[in-house]
Length: 325
Image (cartoon, rainbow, N blue to C red):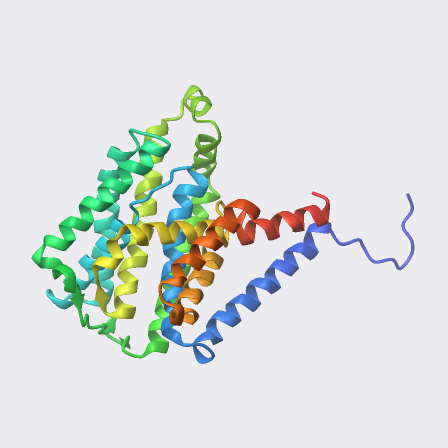
């Protein structure tokens, strides 16, 4: 076929899509950088911390197919370790956060090796039992402050230079931590390791027959998920300067599962959207008191019944149908 003189070469179909995604990423980055000057920084930081926490749960539930009802023990456990290291031992903020993450990773490996010996509802019940046991230990231990928790945790100077007492400065630090955690989860999901997790979720017997060490991959996913949950919990301590029993309670584990389901299980942005929805509800509907739990329950029922893919999952499905893919 002869070329038409003066005609421009056709643009690849994927190039416009790539440009659109690039523009969206730039717009999102600009919005996140400007957000603390428009909205209350502490609420934004709470959304970011819970978005990272939900991402950790989504890694386990959405990609490995493991429903944990005890993930608050990694979130709250790291919070207690970070608060104790910061307030009682005088460690720097970055060292305290790393201590909390290390605790959650090791604790997640040990409890994961125990939990993955069961599957399905039995796995969920084991994690729930371990979570309740850890809650009791935190309640009785003098190091955690019992019912009072560890209060008035100093924020201090990050790397000896950045004053975290300034909410805007702390916001950018929390944003960087959340971005790092989500990038780590994204790389894990889009790697051969993530593909194997998906294969295990879809058909575990076949994965075993192909020679994969299923228990090893589950334990590694559990450890990574626990470490990310610990990173979220330790960061949250610096935001609210408090580590309490609420952080390790069973309702906290259920709440983060709700965030994952509402946003979209098995999607990258689903946990972020789910965390933003639930945290915003808690903030703006605080005046309704106990009715907030009823509203969250109705949202959960509606999501499971009508929008099983979650908000992001449904939007992605509609876009795929619109493109005819």
